Image (cartoon, rainbow, N blue to C red; front, side):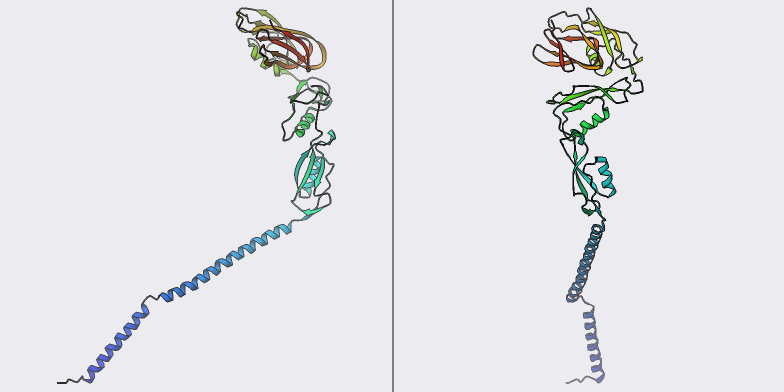
Amino acid sequence: MKFRKSKNESKEIKNLTENDSAKTEKSKGKGFSFSSAIDSLRTSTGVLLFTIIGTFGIMIVTCLAIFFSTVQGAEKVMVPDVIGKNLTTALIELRQKELYPEIQLRYSENENDINTILEQNPQPGAITKAYRRITLTVSRGMSLDSIGNYVGKTYSEIQQKFATLYAGETPLVNVAPAVVMNNDAPEGTILAQYPYEGTEIIDPIELKLIVSSGNKTELIAMPDIKNMKLNQFMDLLKTSNIIFDFTSKTSTEKESYIDFQEIEPGVMVEPFTRVRAGIVLAHRSSENEPVSGLFTYTLPDYPFPVSVQLEAQSPDGKVSTLADFFHPGKSFTLPYSVEKDTSLKFIVNGEILEELIVR
């Protein structure tokens, strides 16, 4: 038997089919699309890359603009002529033009050229930009083969002379601290020197200078030497600028010591004041012990203190300096303690005046 669908049933079936198709299309619209995502990523990446390149380009252009504005903005100036001028004057003139020095030192043939500009680069009159470095060749003076005459010059002048002469090098002449004495000459004036003029400079030399105190009276405190051992006294003697006139006596003591000084410690006295002092010499009880004694010599009365040394050469040939100081002359006394058969040399201004063997 055949059944026929009614007209209403057919209409309901059609509606259901259309609804299902609509739902299917709607679900397709809400799903994930890979092709759409890739297209979107390509678009955003291009924009980002363009932004980065554009920013970087702007930075480069800005930096170049700043650089060229700085370089091109420097004022052009004329290089001053500083050849033959003192270094201080040359530096001031360069500074006024906003130029900066690069200094090179060189010996010259004239001792009076010291600190003088010998050459410059760029040459005088050249046009250059401000803030440029100008090379200055500065004289360090004449290369010395011997000691000159510095009497009458100032201590500071000689200090500066040798500091400039040996700048950056191991100095062959070392200026010792000034020995000041009362004198009418202007303060700082060199009254005497050691070594003397003409002394050849072969090995390093210590230049010792006697300097005037000027109008003011120079006073120093009397040191306390009582009960000092001999080695302590020798260290003090280098810088005390006091002249000790010794008398000696022997005893059973194993070590020499000072037992008397005429002027009390702390009293203010003039440099090179003479002071009587006494020393007790150690007793030599065996052949292995040192020999103690008192070296004496009579010197001329010098107008200024002279450099004196007492050197000792031991039996095995070792040389040492027992004392090195300034002395005004006349009576010279100095205690010593050395090995038996040691040779003592008394040297004044580089000349050996006395030599003896200690027995």
